[in-house]
Amino acid sequence: MSIISRNSPLPRYYQLKEIMREKIRGEEWKPGDLIPSERELSEQYGISRMTARQAITELVNEGLFYREQGRGTFVSRHRITQHLTQLTGFTQDMQARGQRASAHVLSARMWPADEKIAERLHIKSGDNVFRLHRLRIADGDPLALETSFIHFMGCERLLEEDLNAHSLYHLLDVKYGQPPLEADQELEAGLVGADEARLLKISVGSPVLYTRRTTYTERKQPIEYAASMYCGHKYTFYTHLQREHFVR
Ligand code: GLP
Image 1: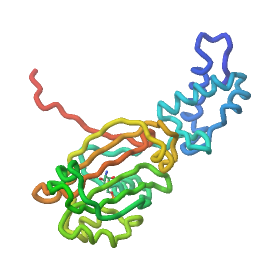
Image 2: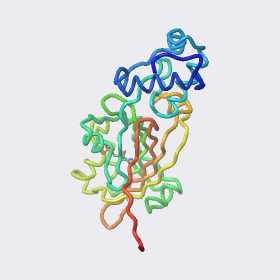
Image 3: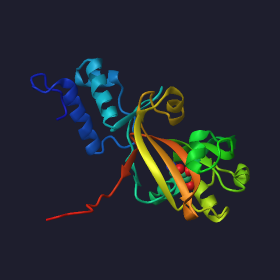
């Protein structure tokens, strides 16, 4: 299908969606490509701009396209898969995919833990923790926003580290003797607010995945509590499930 049929029982926006899907399947439109505007699509296919908008919006909601404020709509990149059974850090996940991970540190400081964080880290509320707020980037593409609260004896030494360039988990492994060994993690769906949307370069209200992770080192000692927000259209969380009891 490459034209929109007026006699078809299929609604026009639906036909346009199928045409655009085909362009992605056939690699005429590749990940990261800017797609034509509503006006261009409406002229090219002889449909109204509203119809073109509906088709684009549905493909944005399905994750095939993503919008960037003031720039237009793009074809989504292949999703990044995070395995939910292995404890990995962002840098390690990206390296496994042949991508270059980096971070833009938005703030790094010592911070008195509130009750919730103190409970997760098994410390007293008001105890000082190292608070790190980072935009996580893969090959120049913003993927996630993360706030980590780190606590161990001497954690204030992290203030001197260049966390724009270095992996936190790698530093904890090799320099601080606090290797992250296991974690409890929760996942939740949500919609992005205005400030985060600007940093992640997505439209306000786009779907995001929240994760909350408590990371432990030896003897199940908590060292990190991290709250992250991943762009919904760029990430897949993967779990392998096995049946425990099977009675024939
Ligand atoms: C993931 C986790 C964070 C963790 C980070 C470490 O993104 N959600 O809890 O802090 O990895 O990543 P890196 O080692 O690249 O700093």
